[in-house]
Structures are given as structure tokens and as C-alpha cells.
Length: 341
Image (tube, rainbow, N blue to C red; front, top):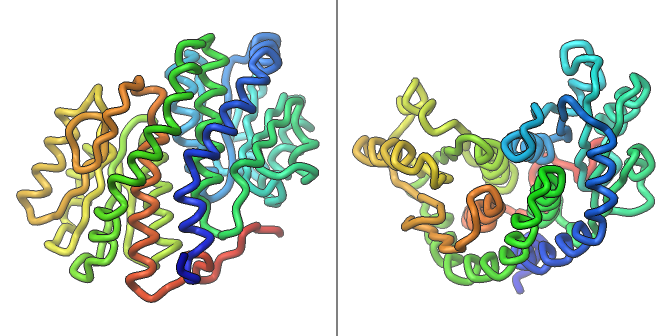
């Protein structure tokens, strides 16, 4: 394995194994989690984190609301800490705080402020014996997501998969929990089958701007993949909802643009229409989805359960772009693994 980016590469490629361990850990706590959620009789839920885990919160909250029917949204932890009056109402709200390290200052203070106002807290993190693991009414520690690199890859997908399982548990969807166990094998196949495509696109010097499109629960994932491209490769990268891209952002298209579409099943025709329109305007495309695409899942897993599959090839794209520019994806410019104030 090459020295430059060795940690990031290893963490991307070992995600399926981490998923299997994470799912086993969550499944061992199904009764505890279901009883906690039912006892709370929550009227709403807030997912929170910082950086990558804020984007995770956007994706997780959309899926949680879709599956449980409980109103949910994702917010940066700093908003809950500093702007509590506009962040949430004083009612039966559950705060679900997500953090890789369990040490980020804003997330810790958000949990503390929320509990001080009488709210219940559930935390998910990757390291035991960190401050965050003492702040929740329930604290889930998922060590399979631990990482040596700064930019989150394996941690993000492991934590996101855990929130997907949590939503299934709270919704009483045992069938979906069973479906999730099929994802590690699909993930292994995608990494093996599409690594050359990620390398080809990532090393193409003719590309100088990247746009990631995703709607519904996939918008937060588009934000995360865009962040990976920025962090690792210092490239111009932005996320958008699919149909919103027509309302102004398409003006930025050039032949040096790569448009990455996280294509859904339920609205595939609308989303493919956007991609084809942008291809006609000169953009290059990378469509990712269950049906026939540039990256095809062919997972047989329901749409609600399979969203984590959008991430690995997109992460590899950012990794290869970083190497092609002579950068080290293990050590992104100006970044630290944990932000402490």
C-alpha cells in the first residue's frame, strides 16, 4: 500500500467489514432502543453533529421522519447550543447526537444545554470513555468506525448505517433490519467493481469543478461527498437538490464539470432528466443508483435501507482526486480531527 493516503485508502476499503460489526452491535440492543423510544412518546426528534456528522444528521433525520412519521430535522450542534429558542420547541423532543470522536466541543455543549432544558438525549460515537459517552440517556459506542485519518469515511458510513438501523427499530421495521445485513456484501462488490472508474475520473486533469446532486434523504449524503472532495482534494465542489440545480446553479456548467447524481428509485425519471439536460449543456456525468447507472448497486435492498451504498465510490473519487493533485488525503489542509474550543 502506498504511503500517501494509506490510512484513508484502508478506511474506505474496509467499510463493509465495519458495517457488519456495527450492525451486529445495534441488533444486540434492539430491545433497549425500542423500549427507550416508545417510553419517551416523542413528538419530534433532532439529529445533530458538526461537519460531516451535521450532514449525516440531515440525511438521518429525513429518513427517520419518513419511517417513523415523527417530525425530525438535522441541525448543527452549535445552533442547539447557542440558539436553542429558534432550534427547538419546549416539547417532547429527542436529541440524537452523532460524533466520531465524542470530544467535539459544540456537540458536547449541545447535549449539555439540551439536557439542562429537560430533554432526552441519545448519542452515537466511535470511541469509549470519551466525554460524549456520558451525556446521553442512551449512549451507543461503535468502535468499528474508528479512524486514523482526519477526513471521515469509515466513521461516517458506520454511524450513518447505525442511524438507519435506529430509524428501523423505532419504526418497528424488523424486515428492514434484516435487509441491512445484506449491505456489507454489496459494498464489497461496489468497491471492487468501480475503483478503476473512480481512479479514472479522479485523475482526469480536465475536470476542475464537481457538483453532487441528491434529494430527500440523499441530500445530506450529497453534502457529505461534496465535503470529502473539498477536504481531500481542495477542489471546487458544491451540493444541490436535483431539481434546484436548474434554478441558477446550472449557469456554472462547463465541459470541465463533473455532475455526480445520487439517483433515487422513486423519482428516478425526474432526476435522470436533470442529469441529461446538464449533459446536453456540456457537463460530464456520474450517476449512482440501484437501477442502470454508471455505478449500479443491483442490491435488491429497499430504497430506505440502501442509502449508505451511495458513499464508498464517491469517497474513492475524492481520494483519487487528492492523489492526482499531489496532496495527502490523510492530512487535509488546515484541518484537525477534533475541533475543541
